[in-house]
Image (cartoon, rainbow, N blue to C red):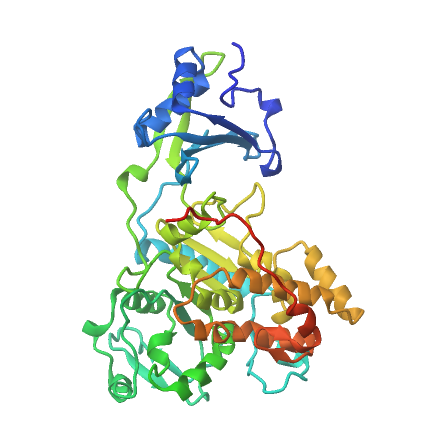
Length: 490
């Protein structure tokens, strides 16, 4: 049979071997249907797979592209099919795989706990560069030894923040606010979340006395209850949540705690990130649609032998490349659009992302998800990947073997007392940061203060409101790049 020009009907020896050799095919539903009717077996199976999830030929369905690459050691073919249109993001991505994928389990605390616990244990035991920063304390002077301030410790217990939620002993159900006076040692977890349109339950001058005795369960929103339950499941007693552990109507306390944000996230055991929740009422866990399960296609190979192809919706990941990335992030991963979260995620040694259909694990040596999409081929990129060179110096930690070129560049820059590389990396970091959203413009600098302090220790330079004294003149010589807007005008 002649090769179809619309699909991946090629010999195995001709298949691309990795994402760098990925092949893209663009077609319309009409073209696909015509090819299937003319007898192309591959197009026929692709058509049947689409029809299970989407009404092929409807006015809302078009095919952005079909891509194929060899993913497995046996060179079997993975085909990804994006459905959408040219003006909006692809609203569905189908994967056609020749072997049965792992079944999807409901995204609940019970089902997710073993997976999360296994990654925590593996990281804490085996990852050399995910150790807690030992007793990091912010300094008023930048002339400090990087090695002494940022020494890696294998100890999992550190000084607790000024205030934490005390979840009590195993079996206890009460929650109260504990003031530690920065003198208690222990293991604690942080929660990173979107506040949303409504203000969540907060600690104020009027409520702090009452919260120290007990925070009524009826007042605790769903997300915080999920975080409390998951923290207890991990057998951790203390939890830090910004709106409850900072006195929100006390400007002095707010400024003091904001200045310690780097310390708080840096010394946490793990940060729970409500990555797909727009507000605290949504909770950490989400239920996916039943039709997002897999569909089995039956086929015959050229030798007339039966075979199965498994079709499933691909779970979304924030590393996916979409035409309108802003729309995609808002819909699937709203937390990733927030400016405050930028340094929280970079500074935390470990982050556990709670997404719509799965958990995602992120630490200084590994990025993994329950569906396995972050595995080879190709290394997915995330904020930690993109700025691993900065983090390596700021946290005195390496990231993701083998050694990265950026790290070598920074080592060379430091040895030669050349700050050009550091300037470039800081500018890249700020450029990414300024694309993120923040509720109050006055928080722009505080939300970056933790990363700035880390860079200050490395650069041995004076930090001046987002810029650096030794590079001040050059940094002020900027202009607005006239580019097409990333989103269509309303």
